[in-house]
Image (cartoon, rainbow over all chains, first blue to last red; front, side):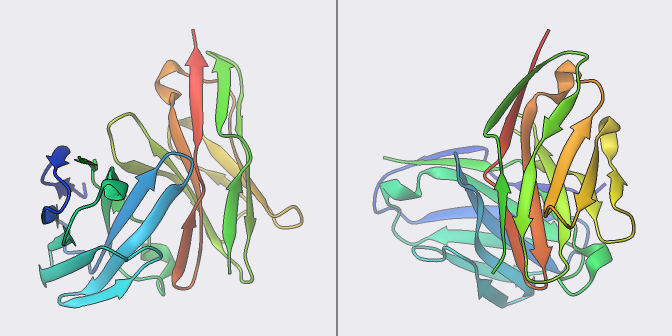
Length: 117
Length: 111
């Protein structure tokens, strides 16, 4: 089974802190994604990566950055956390990109619930 | 641009009765459509996926969905609800490099 592991289930941070959310997948997937989940809004894509050191902005990249130094690990960084970044963050991975219809199923981690006070 | 609308934010059924979760989509291309389920404090899990091979798609745990192009719908159904089906369900549309999630439908199952 594919396993996507997010390092923290719950985080509480203060405004202005630098926050790192870590995600690791164990199935050699090329693609990795960071989403933000808010009630009534579904999932919104923050960033995705289709290869090591490659990244693309999603719909809501402002206030976030990402890092992918190794294929299995994709980090989301909040440079200076703000209260409006309080949310559930979900990491996902997929075997191959959007150009391969049979392999674009995304596998999700359990999520990190971040509270910024 | 494409989008997906889940017509009900909350559906409540009794155990053993049918489930219907409604999803309409908008896409300029021939899309792929998915249903994902999220149980409390868990990540999303794929229920089923449509990719044009057949309009009626069977998924896990007895769920199925029917693609209706004329109605731009992809409703999720199950003949008999189980207590373990209580969760949030997301309809997703994908075309090329764009993937859109619906806002979610919370399913409550009463004993």
